Length: 255
Image (cartoon, rainbow, N blue to C red; front, side, top):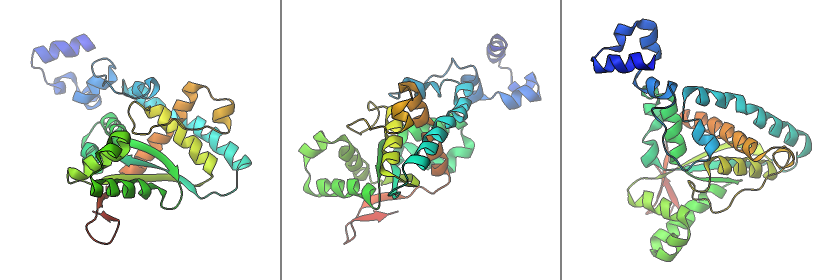
């Protein structure tokens, strides 16, 4: 089929000439992804996560990875029921997402996935207002113009860079109502999937439960991939609200 498609492109042949079923199944992006060889973006993600970007078949297989999340959830539901006030969160760059929710319906699903992943620059866990601490720290650094701190902390440097570009940081929370160790393990798996080479996190996470006891290194990343996919679906279901430094008495402003 691939030789036929190439031949048609040389002859300036329209895909409509190939027949309606094929034309509806293979479009410009579809050719690149379904063949799995013409479009392989280079990333700093883990090999397991990057593989989901190599073909539609690999991307579709993400749904099978939810079994690792189920095993993780079952163990914590039975063995760690105290103090379930924690959640996970992501910090994202709006210059990368560029109103992804509004554009998603016009993009290939793998382009949406790739854009979402590229936009993430920090993975965390916490409770209450913990995610806002990073932004308050960045606002202090911005006010003091502390170049030394920016060199030492890439997370704060990126937040300040976003603000100087007249944009605001995107914050996405998920998996609320879980224990500290549960959130810590989910954080660790998402960090491993995205990799420290991509993120502004400076440390790997800590595992508990089956992820520590029985999951292999690859399976831990698989769980992280499944969790990231769930976070993407949540992101696409909400508006992009940018958090900016404020000039008034409030620590942060939302736009």
